[in-house]
Every structure is written in structure tokens, then in C-alpha cells.
Amino acid sequence: MAMTAVARETVFALRRQIAKIEGTLPERLQASAGATSDADVNTGLTPNTNVTIVRRGVAATLPDAFLPTGVERLDAALSGGLPKAALSEIHGIETRDAGAVAGFALSLTSLILKQTQGLPVLWIGTTEIFREAGFPYARGLHASFGIEPEHLLFSEAPRLVDALWVAEEAAKMTALAAVILEIRGNPQRLDLTATRRLHARAQGAGRPVFLLRQAAEPEPTAAPVRLIVASAPAVPRETIAGPLAGSIGRPAFTITIGKSRTALPGQFTLEWNPDERVFDERRGDERWGEERAKNPVAVVSLSGSGKDPAAASGAILAFPAVGSPAVGNQPSQRQRATHLGPRRAG
Image 1 (cartoon, rainbow, N blue to C red):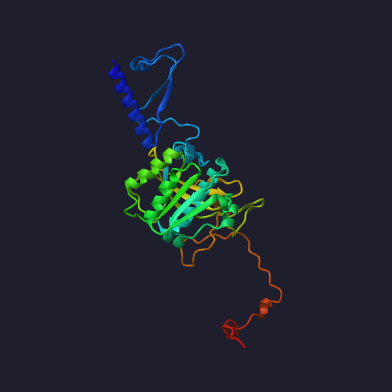
Image 2 (tube, rainbow, N blue to C red):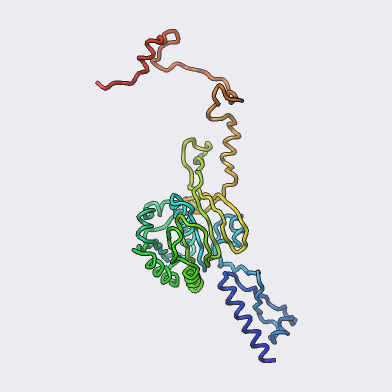
């Protein structure tokens, strides 16, 4: 009987360890007062004792286990947000997406620093990475993300093996709020074993590790979450009188869930609010839809030989400009050619 209880406790311990590696948490159940549950009888525990039961596919969400993005639909698809004590991948399909990937990572860093005052974030990359994508601008960090320059540290490694070593050593440090590792492509050294080590270090320290990947293809890794990030068109700036034509609004990102604990796919367009430092979701380009509803006429009319040309937008009144010739004094055809010819200096 004693051996059976010991064996059962060993199985429970192994299941808890597997759940920790997979990024899930065991479900905690508390026996009701004055009653003895089946688990109490089977395990030989006394009533009114917290019993940890691990079920496959069941994960309990602790209040501080995830970093919510603030976008309800995205957080629901990620089962609460990005895991804090885990490795998370942020992909850019093409090299030109490096700016969007970095901007999204800095937005997450801003959210993290709100909760961990005073702790810095370490950004690790190779010389090739920083030569291709550059370093974040200090003034822009403060203006757009509220990040003080002393809170963002950089480590430039000459080789990928050196960058991975620095990342593994930094991932286990509780003196850092987060670790960012930026890698280009799909190097052979960054295999499943290397990502398992990073993920295990992040779990042990209780800190997030973000793996930024430039121009990389999805491949098996230990990260429970993979987000694919690209830049999205910015909408005009909002003013009291309405959208300001010709202006550039907030930075926007297209976020695609490539991998998550819930296995729920989804694509979202997020705008970063640099004033309040929060994400806002833009659904179906709502603002552009409002603008099209206000002015349904096409910006550029179709050609005369085209079908269904755009209708006139209303009455058009022409006023002669100051100093322009009168209607009856237009230049002749012979004069017009000279008038429209290229200017000659001197």
C-alpha cells in the first residue's frame, strides 16, 4: 500500500514536471470543507488539503502568469497573453519586416517595464544583425515607448555562438526584466536543443525571453508561442475635426498567430498608442471604411474609354486665379506650344 502511494506521488511529480516544460500549469483543486473526495481516498491524504491534479490539456491560469497585450481578442486566442516565464518567438518573414518586429518587441518591452520598475532589458544580437537593422534610437525609445535609455542594454556578439551563450546566461538572471535575442534566418546552431535551453532558463528565472527572427521560416522550437509580425498601413491622424488628410497616424502591426498553446489561428491589426502606451485593435480598417462612406466617389476617375466612370462629386465652380488671363484671351495653339515648352536657364 505504501509503495503504491509512493509510486502514485512519483507519477504526479513527473506529470507536474512535464506540464512545466510544456508551458502549462497543473490544475489545483481544493477539497470542500468536511468532505472527503475520491482523490483524498486514493492518495491517502486527509480532507481539506490542496490536491494538485494534472490533466492533459487542462491549464490553470494564474493572475501573473501571462503578459496581456490589452487586446481582448488576441489575449483570448493566446489563452491570456504571452507567457512571462517562457520563450516566445516573434518572426519577420522578410528582411524589410525587421523594423516592424523590433517595434512590436519594444511595445512589449514597454508593457513589461510598467510592471517591473527599475529592471533593465537586455537586447542581444550579432554584428550582422545590428549592421543590417541598426540600433533603436534613444530619443525615439522615450517618445514612442516610454523607455529610458538606461533601461535598454545591448550586447553585440561577433558570432552566433557567442550571442546564444550570452542569451542563455542572461535568461537565468532575475535582475533583468526580459531578454531579447535577435537572430537572422534559420541557422543550424539555433536548433530544438538550443531553444529548449533558453525556454528552461526562462522558466527557472520567471522572466520572458523574446526570440526575434529576421527573414526566418517556421521550424520546430521549444517556444510555446510564435507570432508573425509585419507592418500595417497607418491611417490618418485623428483630430477634433476628424481625420487629418495626408497625415501619418499611429504605427500599426499585422500580427498572425503561427503557434500557440490553444492552437487557435488568427490575424489581428494592432495600433500602438505612444501616448497611453497601449495596443488598440483595428478591425477591418474601420477608419478607412468610415472615410469611404463619407466620400464614396473614387479619388481618380476612370478613363473616358473605361466602363462605368465615376460619377461627378457635385457642382464644380471654376474661379480664375489672380493675374490669370481672361477666358477670351487664351493663347493660340501656336503660342501654347511655346508657352508649355521647357524652361531654359539664362
